[in-house]
Length: 488
Image 1 (cartoon, rainbow, N blue to C red):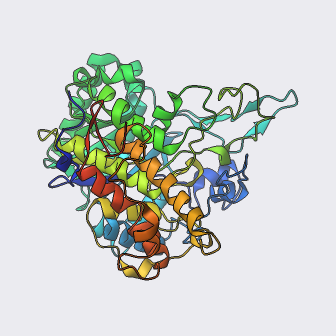
Image 2: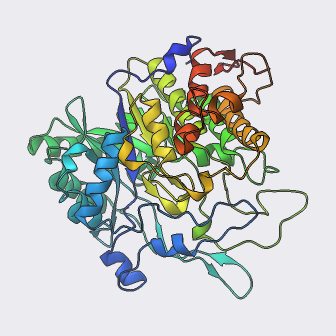
């Protein structure tokens, strides 16, 4: 199936679009972490303790709104308003079951569902069936690193039934639970674990029985969505009884496929790979609807031990021994979102759903929440792509946004680098200097009316993302991707 239409107008927001954003419940006081680490521990500890590994490494990534306790309704009253105002329709909660009981559920039960405005954002659950590891990395005497396992996910048939039936009975009746075609949405993280436990036919029978259980409780069955897994398992999803599928961390998956000599893949290149290669590759694996997934970055160094010296020749497997995506920008993220719109508009027969990973994955470097480096840049990118007016009450100027000390030429070069990243997302290549690619300095540094620049609004709202939008709408084809004028 072709990935992008030759009609650049396809990059508009699809009708009846649902934007569903994953939420990771690890930033609140929880019984699980009280047992593992001590009373009151949250992963904010790792956020605060992160340090840069190399010049220009953006660590630590600090929440602009503070280290808010997500077990508190007041936190979600702020988050719900922010999400709804900027275009998030649904929170998909990572939901865990270890030791024959739910864990890390306090943020959902005591925070989100008790917030006074939770009806502004619908919610769904993802049965997150991966092994749980201790988040403190350990260095042994021989220099080896490890992150010890602490809990296994539900694997025996009775454990799977106990945990998922609990989810159905406990949450599906909520008025704001997300439904597709009337059926509550259940997201499965690792579909291959179900296949390993039950087999293909057994998984199908499991889902038949779970849908029957949901109907007994008054629901219109269940829409079962697979969110993550090895690519081969996607080819079995239809036979296993799933309704749709997608990805949780597309930036990670695409970055891991970059050449190993790229120690630090650039976000613009990786995002272009997602739109050009990863989405169509995954979509071709099954006849089921495949929803496009986007994410604003990837960097898990807060959870890892600083590696030894950089190696020569460069090799990502020997340094940094993990995948770190660098140089993410709101403009490039907005371009990736718009590429997702084009993907959906070319598939009018599937539910128009765009998933985002993630709302608050601070220690994975993928989050929409504002931070102290980009301010509200990433969530503003979503709002702009959706055609929403940016709420004025959240205007923020980061010290890193103050470029008054730079010369005009330095500011122009900085903006052109952002534009290059955007071009790579939309076209998968570096753009050259053709006529029609406007020089940013005169119009944008001076303001739209020729007057003085208007601080952060001039930099983030008007540039470079809006220029990227205009170019996308005037785009041409290159290698199956809508390319910007100026690319060779």
